[in-house]
Length: 88
Image 1 (cartoon, rainbow, N blue to C red):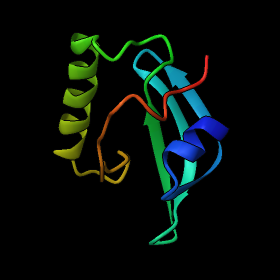
Image 2: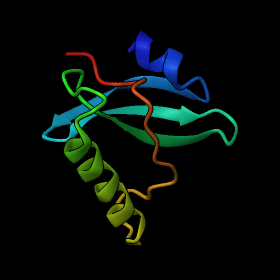
Image 3: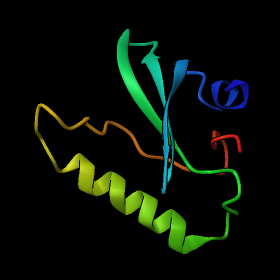
Image 4: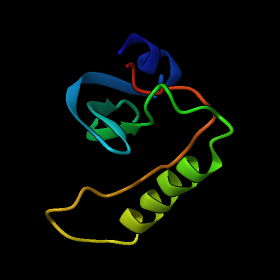
């Protein structure tokens, strides 16, 4: 969690929620707006040049961002750069 916290200083990581096929999800707070967030990060064994995996991750974020439903988490940001990945 410390590595993710250093990579994403705009958020306070408050806990681990789940791990799935596309990565791990952490509970946190967006500091600037003091609102709860879920932070999804890629698994550590994905290398930066695994473009297919990264493309699927970004496509998932775009698809989720297009949805609006009370039972679906809203996507506010999607990024990359090889930091903030889930520890193994």
